Image (cartoon, rainbow, N blue to C red; front, top):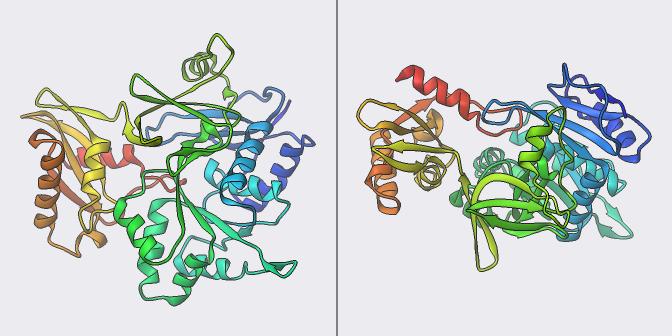
Amino acid sequence: MKLEPVIGDDPRDILRALRGALHGAGPALGLGLVTGLPGDVPAGTAVVVTTSGSTGIPKSVLLGRDALTASALATADRIGDGAWLLALPAGYVAGLQVLVRSIIADREPALLSGAFTPQAFAAAALMMASTEHGERIPTFTSLVPAQLSKLLDAAEHDAAVLSALRSFRTILIGGQALPAATLERAQAAGVSIVRTYGSTETSGGCVYDGIPLRGVQVRIEHGEVQIAGPTLAQGYLGDDALTSAAFPREPDGTRWYRTGDAGLFEDGVLRVRGRIDNVIVSGGINVSLDRVERIVRSIPGLDTAVVVGVPDERWGEASVVVASRGEALRRSEAVQLEEARAAVQAEIGAHARPARLVLVDELATLPSGKPDRETIRRAVRALH
């Protein structure tokens, strides 16, 4: 079947094309960097999402109609049905799934007007209130942690933003780990949060608060999280070798997706520990930057910080904490660094302590809202 690139990122254009693709009446959508990709895709494909991710390596993921639909139905099964607000880019899987869920529920999604701001979010959310058969229609939205943090900051002095946050039956949070301090702030403010785990290859979040959605299987193989079930992508467009490596098939025919994430089960709940390959060797000892980052984010003022690795003359490699100047200036830079180093030493060891704290005006992000780790890493190395 044909692949038709969607020009631009207007969610209304994507929504119109997506309806045809999901119902089988139109060509598959090409979202992202689709220039030079084959013009034909396998039968059943609804969307091809091309994203560079945080590593800068482009991948074009084939998402079938059945996988996207299964994901939307499993989400409704877990959190309920209702109306959705799109507050993320529609060209990435988390935003795309908001539109898919709306189509499956036969409801028009609410759309933010212009750039994401707490005031725009509140205006869109508070206009969603409606009833059906005398009962209020539940509302939902999906955000990344940085958006939630910004909204909680605004809610401290803006009653409309707080009311908007509280108006949702559930707010899905994904894209990256949600700092414990941010979750606690949300819960204290009366905001209903569900943490999601997944990727484009799994049609978005498929594990909610550590529990797989209906039909999704999760296993840990050699420390790696692997996923099976009806939400899996068909593979990567034009790259059979990568598809075979990432989606191995068992003798019984079951396909698994190798996430590249480290994880374990604790009392039946999945705990993701970060990327297996996001490791530096400092003084001859392996250090997980994801683990260091999780600890650093527990320090007040560093809840959105990013930890990257840089060359170090003495240790070979060292970790550096990069934080937004506006957040970090709430407290002394030296105090924050020492608190971060002490916390990391207490939980991991002295070898894992970050070497520096670098303040920037604004953390670089990908269009999806995730930190652009490669750009941040290059900038820190240039300073170094």
